[in-house]
Amino acid sequence: MTKPRILIACIGNIFHGDDAFGVEVARGLAERKLPDEAVAVDYGIRGFDLAFALMDGYEVTIFVDATQRGEKPGTLYVIEPDLKEFENQTPQSAVIDSHGMNPMRVLSMAHSMGADFKRLLVVGCEPETLGGEEGKMGLSDSVQAAVPEAVKLIESLVDKILEEKYFQSAV
Image (tube, rainbow, N blue to C red; front, side, top):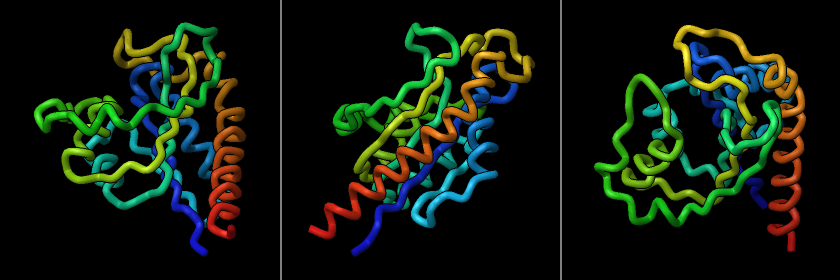
């Protein structure tokens, strides 16, 4: 009976205010003891590294990123995108900017290289400031306050995923 391997891919640019949310969550997760089946990695803006990691056959990938959805800054989301949209992507649409990271383009690139996505979740946080003035380091107060809650949320998701998979494989 094997437990699933889980990649927690923390994404963000520390020079763009609240875009650093994923990076800060990675720091919080580094201080915690995750189960052996889960690994948290701070990818920052390294899209190529993330695309190649997605080729490693993780059963579940959790992206952690600032996510604009129009709610109050600091609001946390758990989103499960439909992965079928990547099946018809052309390799040209998967081009990655080496100075930034667009998670959807990373997924497209990884798919064009043969990655097989089983399950993807996004743990997002509504930013107060995103992009805007380059060189603005540090999270807004509302997003900084959400970081410890995001760490707890991710730990809870990992536990739930492992429990679900354990019981599915035991039946």
